[in-house]
Structure formats: C-alpha cells, structure tokens
Image (cartoon, rainbow, N blue to C red; front, side, top):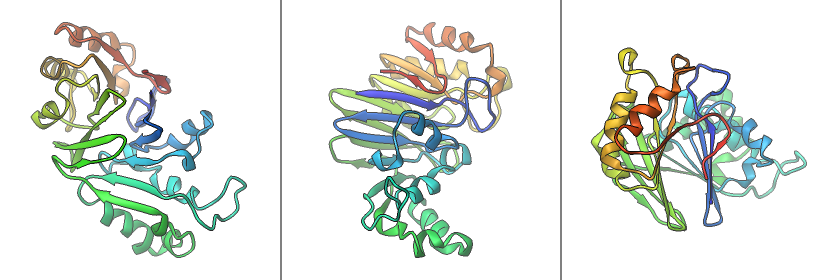
Length: 257
C-alpha cells in the first residue's frame, strides 16, 4: 500500500504547499482524492498518467480541490502517443450531491466546453456518481462517505488490505466526520488557520486536537495549511500530541506509507 500527499495547502501557494490532492494505492487500485490545481503535474513527476488512475474522489467543488478534473478526464481521450483513443479506459468519478449534474453541465451544457462531450466523448468513458452521507461503495477498496459542514462537502473513509484511511476534505469540526473516522489507522485532516485567526468553514489546531482525541487514529496527517502557518507548524503537532495522538504536518509530495 502507498499513501502520498500530492498537495498539502490551499489555493494560496507557499514554498512547501499548494492545492489539495491525495493518492492512495492499495488492493491493485489507484485512487486520486481531490484533483486540485497542479495535481496532473505532480502525478507526471511520479510517472503516473491519468490513464493509470482507477477512481477519482471529490470532497467538494472549490477550485483548490476540483480544478484539474476536466483536463484529467480529457487527457484520457488520448493514447500514450497523443493520438485519439478509440476506446478510452473507463474512469469512476465520485463526489458529493450534485457531482453528476455539475459534471454534465460543464462538459455538455457550456457551449464553449461542449467539445469535451461532442468531440472527446468524455461522457462515454466517465461514470460520475453522487455519494451522500452514510453511503458506501463496494469493491476491493471500500469507500464510505459522511457529509461535513463545508459547502456541500463530504469526507471519505477508505478500507482495504487491513488498512483504513479517512480524509476530511475541508470542514469545521463535525461529529459526522468523527463517527466516520473513529478508530481509523490514518486520519488526514485539514487545519487551515491558527485558532486565533480562524476564518471560514475550517478547523484550527485547538479544534483539531479535540477531534484527534475523539477519533484516536494511529497517525494524524495535518493538511490544507494556509500561508499563515509557515514556520509555525510545530504548534499544530504540539496541540495534537498533547492528547496522545501522533501527528505529522504534510508537505507536497510527502509519502505517508
């Protein structure tokens, strides 16, 4: 199994972190979570093409979690030589309520982008599924979702090969996320701002420590840091480890396992 943090920051770049992306490989399947801007390039640096991804999970529709999805899908219409592929490999895309209708509107309803459906035929090889609170997708990797409080957001729990991972996406502290993640091996959770500077529907280090105490993961990977955290990351680690949970602060391209 391999778990790689492709992007550990927000839409605002820092030297160590840019927008969201997580790659999970286990049970012979590659899952990309949150194809934020730059995701395709990070995968390319690993010699992984979009054709090598089996499933894409989207936590919500903000650009720092979503903007590489259309070029990712489009690239699968071409073979390794850049020629049109007569039978592109099917791709599963899963996201919160509205995912299917949004995708269809973008690739077929917006005239300027409709070449994606009319010429590239992306609707023929892309299966888009909405997932709701409590839904579970069967398969070699079991995927379960929980709604979270962040603009129609969802969190995901992945299980396979005796390992479990929960990824929060963006969220305020949410008991639905706690229930989804409780007892998980690895919790990847956002910590956008320090507690005294917290804005928006996000989580601070103080709140994250409270979440960690309830979930009690073997490891907490802290992600989605805004630039205000630059040079202060150890404050997050101290807050989380004060409740007895081991924590690491993610950076772009960090391999967790």
